[in-house]
Image (cartoon, rainbow, N blue to C red; front, side, top):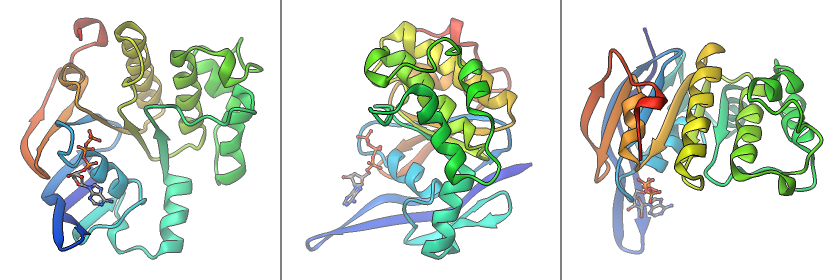
Length: 233
Ligand SMILES: Nc1ncnc2c1ncn2[C@@H]1O[C@H](COP(=O)(O)OP(=O)(O)OP(=O)(O)O)[C@@H](O)[C@H]1O
């Protein structure tokens, strides 16, 4: 059953006298507990869609629903609550708090969420049980990204949104991180949406939304998505 639906979504930005259609009539549906990729070149509108899905931005027109709730009609306060409780974010450059340990970074989620998952268990699941007391500066990029995955999951969100999560990592580390996102998030029943310009990653996805110039060029579904070991970049 569809969990995330976008219907004819547009997002325009006015820059001086020009109107830029960052997202131009996009419709798609994603099922709960699936691993999905939005693929496209720079400027295609991927991040704008992620921001709309995450409640960080609102569409100019069209409808966005998540779990039967209409996100596109929410007021600012409802949006804040939605971002806080329903969405886990993973960014390209990790966005960890530098003067907090790995454990403290993940525990931040407990302070803002209604029904958080245990921070130590999440760090354990991403393979960092021995690094809980390390600060971000004492960890590699891949380890920092694993902390940020643990942090996103500890919020116990419905959706995990990842913006170029492997963009700053070498290919071997990037693949480990993707495997973790897929295995751990899907095991916990989360719906994952990854934004990337890196085409091989899309082969791991159940649904791939190909974006071009703010529009969907193609929607592809894989009944048997590839394992991370089968893809190279
Ligand atoms: N706040 C804004 N104001 C004006 N134009 C914007 C704004 N945000 C995005 N755009 C424009 O909308 C288009 C889509 O941008 P978006 O960031 O969604 O693309 P993207 O596919 O994520 O690209 P990248 O991979 O480079 O991040 C671009 O032309 C961009 O310049």
